[in-house]
Image (cartoon, rainbow, N blue to C red):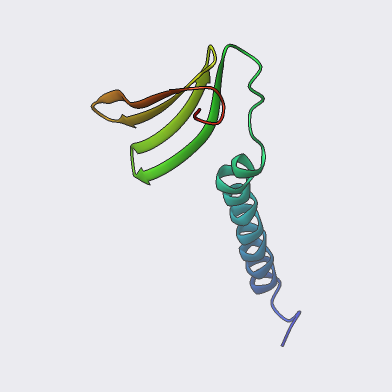
Length: 89
C-alpha cells in the first residue's frame, strides 16, 4: 500500500526527518563538547574536570607553577588541595 496515500507518505518522511534532526541536535549539544577541548593558552589552565553530581564538579587548575584541586557547587568554589609543579612534587 506504499504510495497510495500521499499524506501518509508525507507524515512518514516528516517523522524520519524529525528523528534525524533530533539526533543531530543531541550530538552537537552533548557529544561534540566532549571531543573539542578549549585551548588553554592563558595564565590559568584547566587540567582536568570531573562531574560528581549535577552542579557539583572537581577541577584541577594550573596557574603560576602551582596546581589546585577545586570543588565547585551551587554554594561556591573551594580550594581542596594545592601543590607545586605539574606532577605534584
